[in-house]
Length: 263
Image 1 (cartoon, rainbow, N blue to C red):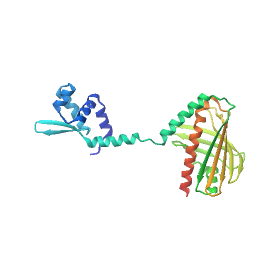
Image 2: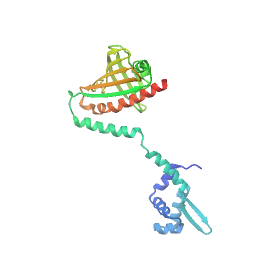
Image 3: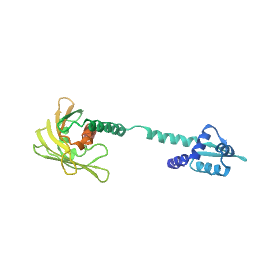
Image 4: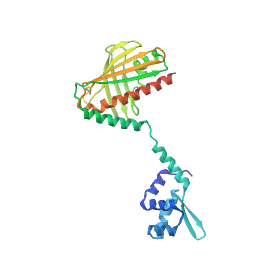
């Protein structure tokens, strides 16, 4: 029978049963010994032992007239494996910690609307420059990667023409949506794309100005460089600005995966 993790943890979580577990961790004990150690009546102790046994946490061995309780080591092995899995860090842990620190720094800086922040990213791809270019400028292709972890693209509009509007709607969960807008300002087909794109507030106004410059170098492995210049930052935009670094790092990871899938 497979272990019911929740039942086992629930049984252990009750204070008296937790103490019984600690006692049996030291050595096997008769029901009477457990009752004496707890300072409890034997019928009450028996009920706790029965609950622990039903959850698979302990075993009660019938040895003639004696009843000896002992920890079920296999159960604790399964619990240890389960908890060890929960203890392992994953990319979300570092991302959330980094994002929280970045928000605190951005909020504390309060540098005003005149400050300019510049971010630089660089990635190398095995795919051809043409595939990388289409991944940025074909809205259907771009929608496959243009979303950070745990978000999905609900709507996306882009075209490699000067003046073309860019519209991005990201969905988080079932109902939360986040809108961004901008436009293409310069195009050198296959080599360079410049566009503005920034999240919008509840009234549809950009929270800051962000000019993105994408350059693609096809000499050897395809090298992509992305520079983002951020200015005109609203006071309430700290979290949005702070999220640019980690957000675009995740986007470029997603781009790398999408291009690898194409290959």
